[in-house]
Length: 138
Image (cartoon, rainbow, N blue to C red; front, side, top):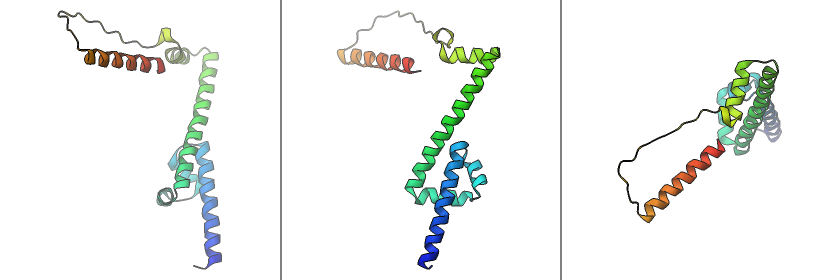
C-alpha cells in the first residue's frame, strides 16, 4: 500500500475509533456502540487487542458512560421520591440510611471456653477489624 493510502486509511480508522468512543461515553454498552458507529464486532475486538491506547480509552469511556447513566438514574430516583413514590423512598432509605438497612445479627452460646494462643488471638482481632472496616465501607 502506498504511503498516501496508508495515511488516509489511518486517518479514517482514527476517526472511526473516536466516533466509537464518543458513542460509548453516552451509552456504555459495547454492542450498541458497535451498531451505531458502523464498525463490526470483529473490528472492535481487533482494535482493542492491537491498540493498547484504544483499549484504555474504551475502559475510560465505559466508566464515563456508566457515571452518566448513574447520574441519570439518581435524578430519576429523586424525582420519584419527590412524587411520593413509596418504592423509591424505601429504596433510598434502605441504601442510604443506617436505620433502614438490612442487618444481620448473630448470636451464639459458648459452652466451652477456649484459650487462644497469642497468634490465634491476634488473628481473630485482625479478622474482626477487617469485618468492621467492610461494614463501614458498605
